[in-house]
Image (cartoon, rainbow, N blue to C red; front, side, top):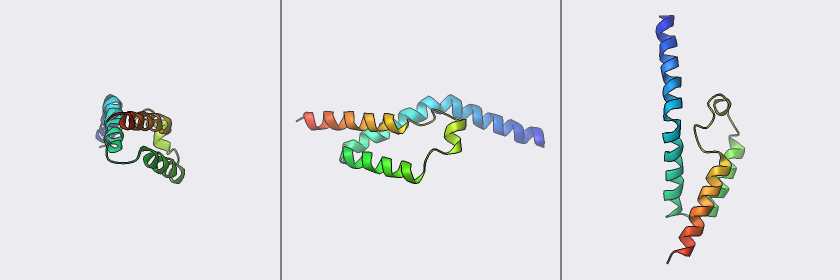
Amino acid sequence: MVAGAFSVLVTMTASTYINAKWLRKQETDCDLSSVEFLNGESMVSALIKLNEIRPNRIQSRIIPKLYPTLEERIRDIRTAEEKKTKSP
């Protein structure tokens, strides 16, 4: 019974590491598609407020790089916003 539970835990952790790159890309793609419909600076402000409410959890220390960092997300949103305002 203990071996089965341990096996499930190891499998879940391994699959998280294997899928981390895909999960990061999905998160970035969602941010970038949101910029098409929303104001980028409003999104940045919301991300900063959410980060203040829910600072780094233990999970982010145990499983790093599962999601883009706040700085990466802000940079990507601002870059997409600049491209949006430059296009006709």
